[in-house]
Image (cartoon, rainbow, N blue to C red; front, side):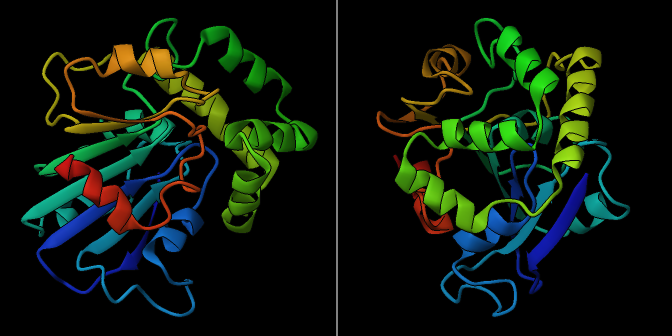
Length: 234
């Protein structure tokens, strides 16, 4: 697993952003409100560490020790990152937001349908990458937003990551008592990757925000970290 600090000023609050499969830090930089070259959003008062590239689920050396310095930790995880976040040893988490993902990433009732997942893995190519992204976005407007902040990673590398994730999911079993739990879930009613019905089932009993016209890519609807954090108050 790779991690990139987008803001590190030594405060007491840390936001851990677990991105989806195939991504890098660009979406989180967009949500922060500034480009990587220009710095960070002035009205965001937490340090921000972005996690991505889950070919290995082992974090970089010093990850746990650095995160442990914070007294208040918020997790925001999207898509496959929702599952990955609970596979990583973290210090005590104060609150956690699941965004169009579940703790059962490949599952007939609570995640991506196994047949759909295997078909995506078997056919993933440069051409099908574009098709997948359009399907993920659900509209031309959302696809334009995604294209402006999409991952710069190579297609072959993304496929390798999906292969490794497939292996991770098959080998790892959920803990009987997780170290922390998600406290809110955001569900897109038009999600074609993690179907909404699967998410409803997976998050039964967890407070939810349901956005009926939102596809799997949620950052056309949520354009800042502040908008996402506001969901905790609902």
